[in-house]
Length: 635
Image (tube, rainbow, N blue to C red):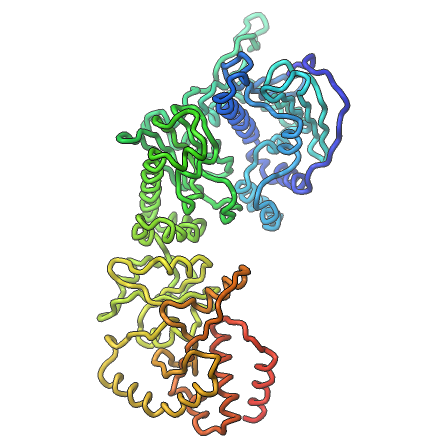
């Protein structure tokens, strides 16, 4: 960056967004052992700037300003103790400089900072999830300046941004003859190792070999007179400057794949897995897709733009082509390079294109195959499931054509081992079915503890029948679409009348019939007492230790789903549950001969406690407390 390019006007001093100050402090102290990533991040930003220029120039070729030879350059000055990373990409305007370098405009910022612990190792991992980017400059620099002009703007509309990372930055209007951006770092005293051509080349080759643009440095030659290496005026490319995804797989090392993932995702950690394929046929395209090791903080914000990078014939088109993969695979990162799409493709065209539908279907199947391959490593898949399982469940309802394939990847907790760990597959469950069992039984609740302790499980525990315990928010919605797996239908233990007759012997069946007949007068009294509050009262065989429970009919909303919808502010029709009572419970036996007034109190108590066991909110909790106290004192 030549100082002669600048004509300084009035400077404006501004304060960093509060989150930026905190992030800068954490970066300098938590990522210090990985300080060379600053070079990777700045070169990645320069590459993105060149890609964006190439894309915008499709509609406006004048943005090239006569220079179509895109490149990135890295220089160092030992005397001044500076490193400069420059590009002739799109550049930034005054407004873009303030927005991009003064704030963190990313969903999940608040959650990110609330999760920071002060533990350097853990915080470094969180920062990796959040992305490091431009601010990593301050890991090694005591002062950073950004000299930039957006392509297409006059030379007098350039901007100089400067900061020491302590809390403020200045923005000055200057002149710049050429478009693009130059970032100059004034290194700290202890960072001498980066003022070496050999060191910079070594880092650049490691982190930037996959970048499709030339990354250049001034050539160094041995000078016999001085007996040292001297810098010449000739630029030389440090990297191969060929897009990684265009190379044969056998020529790419695992480390190169990992570095490319970090380049496109700005992630701090290695990916969990990846797949690289060239597809030929009706549509021709290359896909290089990665599954991250950790979920990003904004994974559940469905409004955030996300998706893979789209290239057409190696020309960058857009960063977040979300049409190329379904929403439930929004955690996937990578590149898809099409040979068939037009260079001027837009988001609207992507939605209508037959070629895009073909790419989407093919890429979806490829990612599902990749996930299936991860299941072979139990520990690795457990990590994947803990990060992305709840999102993958969305695919059951969103992608009917792959529903059974997705279902085979699902993992749940169950009563088999009474653990909250979700490691039971549907195939595992079916393999453990009891003789005569032809249904997959499950229960949904707001937490694993609530599911585990549900009174609906009592008869299943007694008979040794496994029940899947579901407690993710998405589970209720998912099960409205998932009707069967491998020929076995799903049954909620909290809905309808359970058909357990196939697993009951003749004595059990006869005993149930006798009890139901004996308790018919009590059932009639309960129906009368609770008229208007329940659909009906009936004797049940699903309870062993509890006196009562509430259920809903097969096709009605469960109490759990009703609560979720209400908490989201949605209107839900008033639904009356069915109250089922356990005729062999001591409490139920006691109320048979109670007077009408006391009977009404007991009837209400049976209903209220059944609702509470389901996690429901009572309409009149104060009256419930009074009634309970009155009955305890009279007992």
